[in-house]
Image (cartoon, rainbow, N blue to C red; front, side):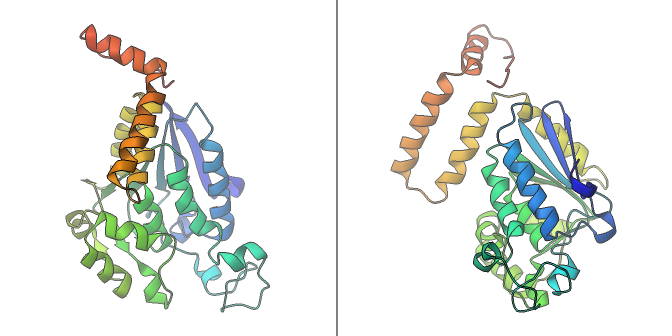
Length: 273
């Protein structure tokens, strides 16, 4: 469980479930919560008891974006241009601090991260959802690149993920207008991968996550790493990276088990190592 319970964490069948737990604020993100989430994901990268992560929110929403008190410059943590609170060196270089850094950790945790969404998925919350490997959402889900609605330019990686997940024109529309998209429209634009009945997003995400957790996790993690790498690489570079990944995964017990199972015409029993 996170400090002050502003996030919850539990493990089920090698799936780590991370729940943003500020339901009275629609799980709005603040500096402290973001910092704790970064610390958690940094730790999860090294843990062998967690093969897959599910990220979700308590109550009626996934994450409504930045905490209004912090964004308004009214908290003890300063924000550039909006408060007189002195900024530490880290924040002077990265104004959003760990809020933006958490987007990076969703990728850098080096394990599949699956989003289970409902209600508001806005601002920083949208960035977190887009950084995940796959998004399961119910019909209450509403998405917005909401920064511009408050007069802010987009941050937290939204401009990286949006044009890669949806079309360029949709990405531009979202960051320029802050328009709120309902679930069906999000699904149509590819922002939601699996649209499920109300209240079933977490259950659906867990089914998928457990399927991944039962697989050869070293190979799965390497595959995930190199798909992300391909977004900024050439074909020749990816062929070289894939050769390295194939060599690395060939030395695992799961590769030996998978090969034996194929030859013996049976289902493999992967152990994750």
